[in-house]
Length: 103
Image (cartoon, rainbow, N blue to C red):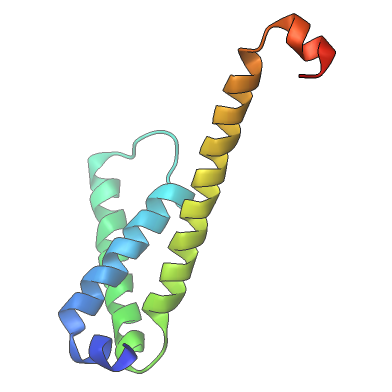
């Protein structure tokens, strides 16, 4: 897989760019929107950084694999958060008599 990704540089770049944008939006994004110029600047820097990471990927470092693990862990965390929220909502709907009896 590493050799195939090294041979297909554009695909490697697009995968790295996608992972980087996803990680940025889920981890580092501020709650409020940035002004348009700053938003453009941030994404331009992400695009440049992704190019640097693509060079390291072509140079036989497992950048895509490591970023894939990070994204997978983030998706697992999100799944766990959704499950906990669903479980709490289900427990909140129980009647007070059921809660006291321990059912």
